[in-house]
Length: 374
Ligand code: CA
Image (cartoon, rainbow, N blue to C red):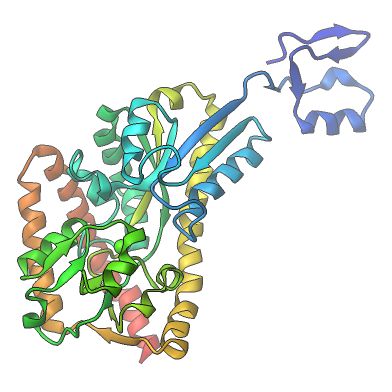
């Protein structure tokens, strides 16, 4: 669109518009400006958006994902769009992100869907549920298995458009000051574990506690709680949990591959030109994978440091405890799906996908990794 360009002496003088670098390149190669490509970028229409998150500013992994999305969008749009990222509590509380984007007070947010389970119970399936999908699997379900359409459908009444935006990979069960040798050891165990994982622990006789990340170290050190889950070695090392607890248990059955979300106010989204929408979707997709790569590249180095330098005792949960947790989880999810038609629809799609992908993984990834590691 160069409607405001004025043709004069065989040249085009641009009013209000700048030409793309490609045009400058062509102009530099030829004196014949009649072949000028009729494409331009309107420099008057720039977008300065604010993005609120549930993470401390610049927190490794989680907090860097929105920063990277903002950087990519600015570079890819050649400065047409700038996104300023705010950490938790800077403009809204950690768990106020959904409401801020929904109301339009902020155009964007970065968080995890399971935090909104009070408002949108089905949102948990788009982050992580116990014994659910791994990172690769949830990427496949959301991006290619019908998940994204359902996700957008359930967020639309809140005026929010979600985009996948990061994954920590399989987490650890967490830090313990008590040994878990049998189901008996779960009885009375006071553990910080949010969401459905907490409900499972409660059903098994434990006492789930919800505390923000910043309070976990002191609570563990002073014995207010016996145990806490957080993320995995890379993040847990930065919080220093090894100074407050002796045992580090796996596997993280409660969060097998949580997907994070970029939330966009729908009115703000609709105000963007198409190319900026594509840039945001593409940047977010790149960061969704990049964050997983970051965790995978760094987790084992951090784990080695925890075990070899700090003397942490790495423990696997006993099989009967895992089995009990799995049975309780499945029954809680079945009950949840009976609550309403929306949850039921999402759960059916999720479960179908999980059954299919598990069957295939048995003879592909699972079989191969088992052979490789023998
Ligand atoms: Ca966690």
